[in-house]
Length: 411
Image (cartoon, rainbow, N blue to C red):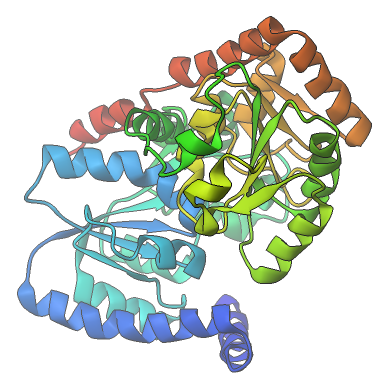
């Protein structure tokens, strides 16, 4: 039944691809995957395969990929993505021998993909449960690991009607999970002997990024020489976030704003600019004549956010008025307090930082203004909150080493 329904989905997806650029990229990219795998297969060699749904999951698994590459430089690695938002950004990732789109989970695709790749081990990152791939890997005796997994009681795996999904869990060789709740839930469905709580590899990743922080061209001229000037960095923002942030910024001439929207397109950038009442400049248009005059820097490209937070006094992370907040750890690692909207319940790190006083959730513009005004009036309170956020990242690092240690004990 699953394969039949998924085939219908694939047909509809191909139809959508005729009109939708993102869908078209996926279809075309998957076609290229097999041609590239043919060459890979002809060259020979054993591969470890890492799969990430999108960019966020890839960054979560990246510390383990690079640790394996460092310890075993002879080991060949393939990284696959489901979404263009991951593949388009990381298709040239140097630590992998090949980066590709994952072909749709149809039996003929799965058989061809695995016949060509012949993986010796597979790592799915956080949320990936493709039935035909899992079944085929299990039949071939290939060990399959889930890294940085996180489970909640509300998921179908743990419902009375979730038998098929629990069966899929049984196809994994080992679960490396983020928290105790996930460990306990998997134990209740008979998988206690395959679960190890190792924490969140994202803490390791953001520490790596902070240690290698990019010096962004033009930033020293955009920011004032007076290091006491507060800088708010707003990352991965959506229109609802900007509707709250920008009016507050307009009313506070003593603050600089660096704004990196989640979606970079002309319509969204123009919308942001329509809300601003103070001088602004787009990053792509920075020049020595405009840097010192602008109060707001709009980031109109991708790939800078994880370093931009390092210039901040305080951070706002978007997405909390939509399906969920984006990466709060990217900001917290720089020891600055983090603010976000109300939809954070699925993110353990956000809940933990809230309880420690390093993160703060707001539900409207009034709450946002009250919080930020308090930090402006009491810089020491802002600093202490930032310290609490940074301490959380430091204290929860080390997941990659724990996973590697566990893997080294396996036959």
